[in-house]
Image 1 (cartoon, rainbow, N blue to C red):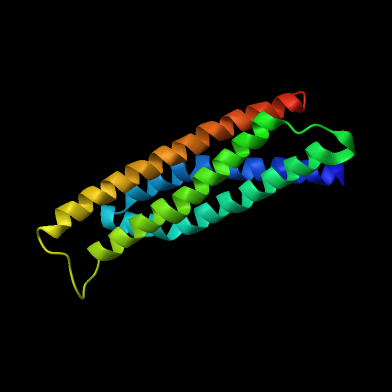
Image 2 (tube, rainbow, N blue to C red):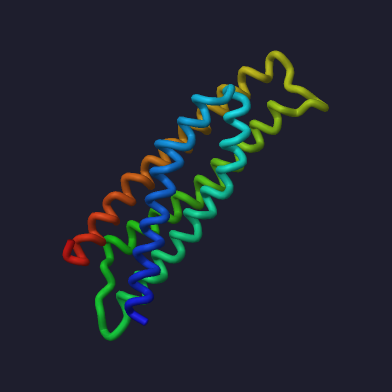
Length: 160
């Protein structure tokens, strides 16, 4: 069981880290480079919920597997890594649910063809979306940097 938990822990970390790298540094830039800004926004908007689900699942698996491993057979829980994973999971939950939810509402209002925003309202909505997008990017960067630290600590614990 210990080996299976270690495997789950490592895979969840690698998938989480890899999804951040792939989406942030490859997929999103390529999408925005090859499509119009509006089309790219729609595509990325379709990807985001799945991107966050990966973070939710990997966060849960990495935290729970580390917790179980740390408490098996009188072992000790690596508290810094454990709390850093909890921090990352909270940031991803906040970003996906609250920040992402706000961004989706703003985009829906901007695209409302039945009741389009007025000429006065549209710039304010665009400004609010820009602010929300920056917050999302900062939170993603925080999770990325935290994941680097967790990956480093994990590799050290494995003797790499």
